[in-house]
Image (cartoon, rainbow, N blue to C red; front, side):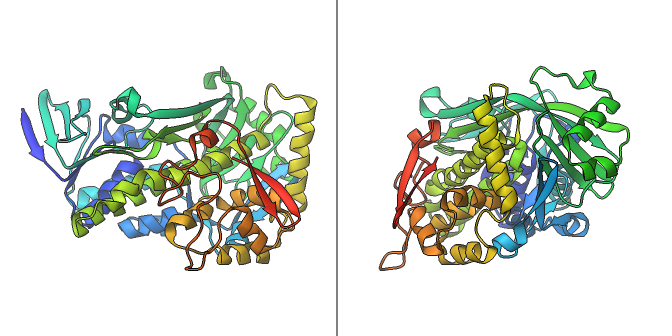
Length: 481
């Protein structure tokens, strides 16, 4: 058996594993990536490409964002269409200048691969029978390559091998808890070499079902329509898809849309999934290995990058400062942010889709919510009030993540309950305020701990609907978690 030793062994060469490897390499931490698929297969996976500001910042830190800045499309907002009209939500105004960047995940993966190869950091592709062992004390990764068995000893293992990977599956069942919801519909997606119908993404709610107009570049578009779970992509001709998409978008988009042959068509199910905790001795899960969100809000890759940022900084702290504090807090910090995104998806996905079991009351309630957003795309608050609230809610990073993880749509969700409240009342509402020494209180509804609770939301709040009453002077509201 061929053996070697590194400080960190990373399982999985998708964006999460490659980004973690690059951050560690730049910090002088010896690492190797083990991937069961070929490099060509990894690059061939079609995935979303909407990057939030924090993800772009992390790519800058990793030194892999040069082409992204040259070719990426900066979006200052997004569009929502319903009732035959279109409305814009302006990210830049509502967040104090933050934007999102459209840059295909395939291109991001290519950039990470090329930099890793140029810098001589090892990635082992087409590794067969990958397995992880001893992560309670002396971790090793074993696999077969070119007919020979190989073993990598390490200080830590990072499981970045996705939802179907072997790292989470290797954890004893008694040590892990999972939360899952499978939605009763999917997305039929089509990729085409056609110019986008809009300079920003368009999220469409229609009685026939959800539709999304997205893009990968100024000449390549990605479109989706809601479909049943048993739908087959091959049953849809290109013309059938374009006709159905035009029925669901607003009249202006339907009229100006440029159609063409598909490059790729596929059906994707929608699922929410979280595994807790994300650390098991010396094994750490990151990205899709630990959580899945529906693609509705484009949070998946951004959450994975957030995990990687937390883990990379914790490992640098361990080797540089001889401190395990960051590693001990990793799971709690990551899950705090993850559950915020899960909550947002739980709100936004049903809002924009046609639900098979809907009753008339549900349809009218959804229409009312959409109408409210349309009347006030800033979420019921003037942009200046939201900015004021965000500035006044500045505190150390751990507590700050409670708000920062919400995204603009999360601000809309929060403000839907707090419409008309002042910034100080908003601060009371989320259960956090500065004490005498400038430290925030633990948010109500979260378990106690150094970073929004060691397990993110409490188990009760994570597994079902839990109402969180908050007194606001003469007002009382309930936030659903």
